Image 1: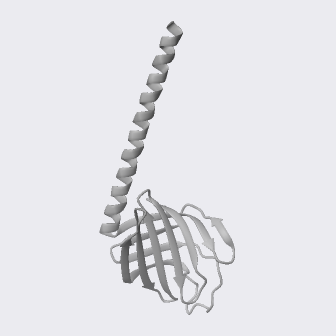
Image 2: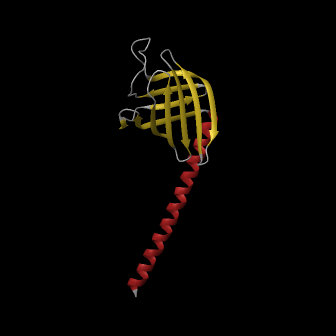
Image 3: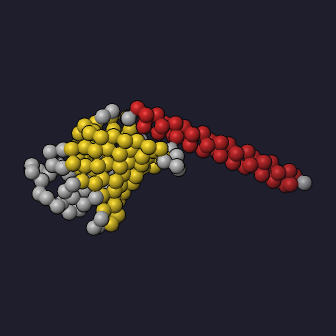
Amino acid sequence: MKGVISFGYLCLSLLLLGCATQQERAERKEKMQQTVTEAVEKRQWHIDVTTMHTMRYGAKTVTPDFYLELHGDTLRSYLPYMGQLHRAPMISPSQGLNFEARIQNYEQRTKKNQGVQMDMDVKTDEDSYHYSVELYGNGQAYIQVRSQHSDPVSFDGHFD
């Protein structure tokens, strides 16, 4: 009889522990959604990049020091690039996707799956770029970069 009672207490405690874990997960998810929403509204966010997808070389895992940041009307891009340049850069050395530039055009729209898509155009001494950033409530991010003079590239990352 003692074994049955002990087993009952064990089952009850595991059930309560599972409920607390689900509630904590829901609270963390809600907090992340709120944090992402506030960051997008303020135009103050940072995305750490984890994977690069290239047109010619496939997907590559990248080191954790690459990122994309938005601070008001300034975009800070420190991203790797692998692809073909269609025109040699005018200045040397090539800065690639490593720059800080003012945003010339910014559009934002809400996506159906609790995400926000932000489209930004920037111009550097080397090229003009179009960044399309999808940021989701769970903190996941997807970045597409197109330019006038090089192959497109995309990245996966997470909101920090």
